[in-house]
Length: 423
Image (cartoon, rainbow, N blue to C red; front, side, top):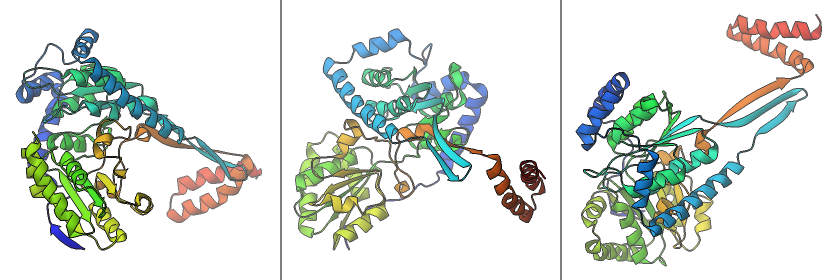
C-alpha cells in the first residue's frame, strides 16, 4: 500500500464542552417542560410560534407550496423505501422450536409503541430524511410517530420537509429543532407519548443529546459527519469517481473521503478531475475544505489489500467502481451501505433508491449497520415445557444454582422436581 494523500479520519470523540452544555439543557428541559422548549427555540432558531405543532390546515398549506413534480418525486422515493422496508419485514419471522423432548422455545417480534423522528435542517433542508426513519417505523407497526424538524431561519417550516413528513406517515409534526426537539420527544412534552426510540441526525449537540438520552429511550445510532469510500480500478471513469467524492464532500467541512486505487495514473486523473469540477460547484467552498482536510488516497497492490484498507476505514458509504464487484461483496465486512458498480451512487441511496441513509459513521460500521425496519421491533423469547421435561431439567438447574450459591433459585427447581416426579 502507498499513501498519495493523507487526511483526518477519527472515531467518536467526547466534546466535554458540548456534553456539559447539553446536560444542563436536558435537565432544564425535563424540569421546566415547554417553557424551556420555547426559551431554547427562541435563543437558537428565533422561533416562538403560538404552537410548535402544525395543525392539519397548516400542513395542507405547506404542501400546497410544493410543486406537483416535487410531490410526485417524493412519493416515488418514499414508495421505494416502503417496498424495501416491507421486504425486510417479511424476513423477520416468529420462531418456535422443540430443542429437547417437551422443551419448546420461541421468539416473536413486537413493535415499540412510540418513535421520535428528527428531520435535520441546517446547511441543507434534508427533507429526504423524513422517509428514512418514519416509513420503516410505520411498516414495523409502531403506534405513534412524532416528527420534528427545525424552522428555516426567519421563514418557518420548509414546505418540502412538511410534505415528506406527512406523506411518510407522521402522526404529529412539530417545527422545532435541536436538543429541545429531542427533549420534547424523549420526555413526552406537549402531550406526546415519550419516545421508545429516537431517530435522526444533527449537529454535535444533537448527537450528544441522543447519547445522554440513551437508556431513558433507545436511539438509532450516533451519526457523525458523513463519509464515502471509493474502490476504483483502472477502468473506472475519473469524472464519475471525482463527482461521487465531491457529492459527499459538499455535506460538511468535516465529511470524510477515501479513494483506493490500483495505480497512480487513475489517482492523478481523479485528482485533476476534482480540480476541474470544483469551481463549477455552488458548494465548492465546503467541498474543497472537506477534501483538503479529510481526503485520503491510497494505492493498493491487490483487491484483497483494497478490501483490508476499506474495512479498516469502515466507511458509512462504500462505492465499488470495479470490474468484479461481487468479489468484494463476498469479502468486505465493515461498511454502512454498499454501492456496486458505476450504475449506482451514494446520492441514489441518500434520496431515492430505497435503502436507508441513516448509517454508521466514524468507524462504527465495525459493530453496527444502519437504520432498518428491525430497529423498531423487539425480539422477545418465550418458553413452555411438559411436566416430564421440567422434572428432567430441574436437577441440572438446581445443581447449577447451588454451585453458584443461589439457594432460593435452586429451591424453585427442586420444588418442581418433587411435584412432577411425585416424590
